[in-house]
Image (cartoon, rainbow, N blue to C red; front, side, top):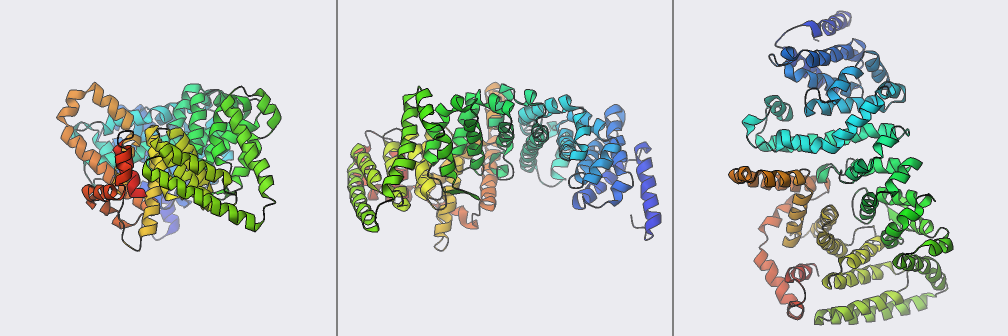
Length: 615
């Protein structure tokens, strides 16, 4: 590598790559570690690919698979991992490197790793490399020669990798019982058990995402849809989201669902799964980064006459809350597009629908987007102002009734104000929908509350930015046990709190911090697996209870740190833990004493105390 003469240097490197698979040196793993570092930092450098690095890496992987005694000798156990990683790094960006890799015979040994011939750690880098090769048109056919095997293996990995990583590594609390080379690869010798666990969680998420990426390559071309569209796998896809840390990087399972929605076969299979449709509906009505994908999928299903009436009775009940959404990210007129699709063949749809609730929803959309808009188009500025004042007076009456504890009457007043308030007064309608939702939440109707709060957030500018509505909807989602949706709303709420209070010093509401902690625990990548392990090995869990609690605390601390980095939170978030709950509760009780006394017998005091802090 240090030879100044480039000709001599290249000849030496080429000879080294030829001889490396036949050498039996203790330093071989160290050499590959150095090559791995070069490939990671300079993936577009053509020197090593032109000198035979791909054939060398393929030969070393195959040697490790075929010769078990060699693999377990010295540090050779590290070699297949480094070799597959080097292949994946060099084939990441350049199609000519990918072609050279295919011609060098890298696919058969990578397929052996994908099948699990060694361990999940090698599967991770193998599926990454195969995904890169399958993403190029010129090398896709070479991967497609193993199509059924690749698709089945990738599906199995995507569905089962979390369980494998947890049972083989994260769930093994005793560091001595873990494979040492796994620990070394994860941490590079830096950090202890907690660092290993965090890195293993990240790798498990990557293994799932890269498996889905490999499936995407086939689904985009309409290949193997009969396998990918199996009902059990489609249900699994709904649960694949990568956790809070990775969510913004990849749409994970819902990304593959959207690709399937572009094909006739995919739409038919998805429409037949009530769980998938329901999951898409929940996503479309959340503040998730991938909300627009949920909306796209539902619209694609509704536009297809073969699937429209299979999904409309569920999806219309959710999409009706989004018809006034102006923009979402870089997409404009989203609500109008939703209304057009729902009202397509409006009269025929009404006749075919047997569900009275859905008929009512369709009529509501028609009245809102057609009839009422037509009526208000002729209003003068003076008439609009008059209605604004009247709606404000009725809203004040509703507020007065709310503080007196007459929640039902307050809800009726807010409804009257909404009916009177012109559609163009979006800011006023945000407050009315949000306040009516709070009444519905206190009356024990979280579904109606979610509907109103979603409408409020669609009317806000930008979308999903009204803090009160975000917090209230987070509570409603929590009641419905929709942990991911509740978590995303709560994160957005905290982000809004910090932005508005940045100049004064941040004090995060205690109840919001508790909600974050609760939902992070519920949506943790291994939460379900941990519960199963706890029930099956209760005595073992009790024995290690102290270690488990310590790990959970550190996991929450780490997640809070990630949230600060990824969501733009500022460093003073530490005030969450310092704000005394007694002081907060006392302030809420003194401010809302009348409401608390009048409602304590009918509703939980915790919800009222929390709402007092928001108001």
